Amino acid sequence: MEKIQFFPENIDFTIKQKKKLRGWVKKTIEHHHKKINTINYIFTSDATLLSINKEFLTHNTYTDIITFDQSSDPNQIEADIYISVERVKENAKKLAISFEDELHRVMIHGILHLLGYSDKEKCQKEEMRKKENHYLALRF
Image 1: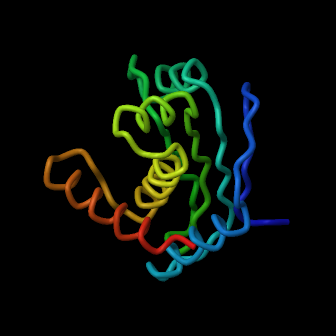
Image 2 (image 1 turned 30 degrees about the vertical axis):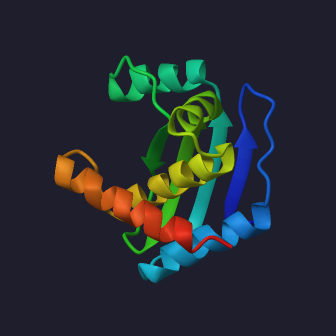
Image 3 (image 1 turned 60 degrees about the horizontal axis):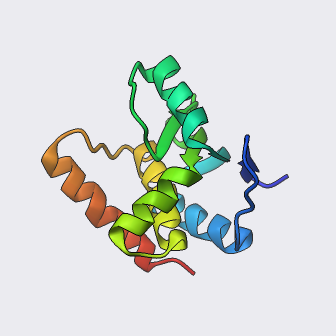
């Protein structure tokens, strides 16, 4: 079984280039000297992600991604990463970029959180964006 899985939840969505995306995510994690146990990308709706955001994070806001780190070993990544396809489409439109580019940015954003990067403070957000851009440039 693949260590990186892609699932739709409550929407009709199929990710493209699965093999290449798995390789890209794997290289990003290996660059940080960690291993993958299991990563589940769950692609869902705004409504589902809002419900998760309210229930688990007590935030009543829409978001494009929520990452649940379930790792018990600090050297191994185990997580569920929920992504709102609707929010990604909306953000791509606002940023005038392709859906795929924005989706990949969000996907690697979740991985960067699992690797220890934060984006709570302004300087952290800037560093996170630099890392996203760095790893986006290394795709495929």
